[in-house]
Amino acid sequence: MADDSSTLTVHSREPEGSRSARRLRRSGRVPGVLYGAGETPLSFDVDARELRVALAASGAVLDLSIDGGKPSPVVLKEAQRDPVRGDTTHVDLLRVKLDTAISAVVTLELAGVDDAPGVKRGGVLEHLTREVNIEALPTAIPESIVHDVSAMEIGETVMLEAVSPPQGVSLLDDPETVVAILSPPRLQTEAEPEIESETGLVGEQAGESGGGESGGQE
Image (spheres, rainbow, N blue to C red):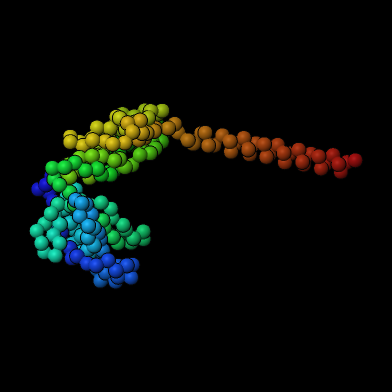
């Protein structure tokens, strides 16, 4: 909701390349770019801690203040993170109008996995689609969409058409996209070829041993 938005103050800057970006990160600031609304992209930098707090506290919408100016609504378009430390190294923000729907990517979570009868009988639940494309007003974009799979049996498949998004949210992906499959237990099917291989190997060794003794007697 709009009341859940957080205010984030950033400083505009001139884009100066990767060397300047590295200096900013060493000083505890994160470089970024603001897009959208038909305006020229604006480069900025923001305190790393303030950015982390604002993203954690907000819903989808941030109130962005540039150089102390009047805040305007934006959403996070993309965040790049350090693959080792997980720190945010760059952010792209998008200007939005609160009364105009936008597209976004959200996480698709599965609930009730351990309670599914097929899982209890040893089946393996494969979660194949973990993100979905949606359309909604900026204030209605959820952090994630949750689908309950607690009734799944072995051999069943969940398609995207079975997922119910929150009110005001539309799914944009193909309804026949496979979200999850509950497959039979794998232990037996994987063990059988190994047993057959070992049996064949023992037979070959026995044959070789027998042939050697026969040759010795001649």
